[in-house]
Image (cartoon, rainbow, N blue to C red; front, side):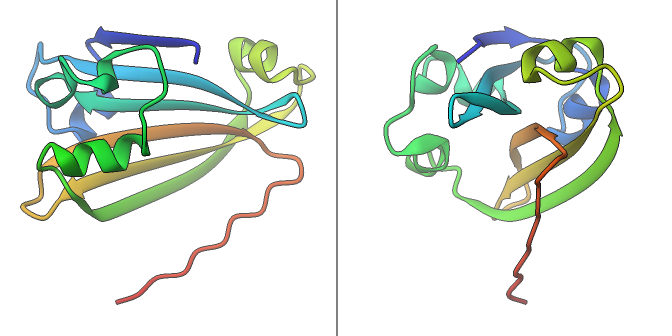
Length: 140
């Protein structure tokens, strides 16, 4: 866990969460390790009106995970959209992921919404591109 803080999120995240100007979100920033090596930066954003005062706003693990906590709060995620892009890693990403200067990352952005369409979570996962394989199975 790198950080848990309430912030005004970047414009693209605020839009994905359906936040009005000035609204805040709780972000949980993590570094994901594989065999002791950093492979992913995972930033999970939640509208502050949902996360404030819950374990989502605390810098520790959430028993059962965020999805379980959201469901217990009455925000069962049922709609998920994902967007994947590739780009050169930023200087900060190079540092945190221990990448060479010219390396690229995959960025997967996932937006989850409740049954009524309320956006409840946006996760931005910045991954080491080398060795990644993404597979999707959809039920329609």
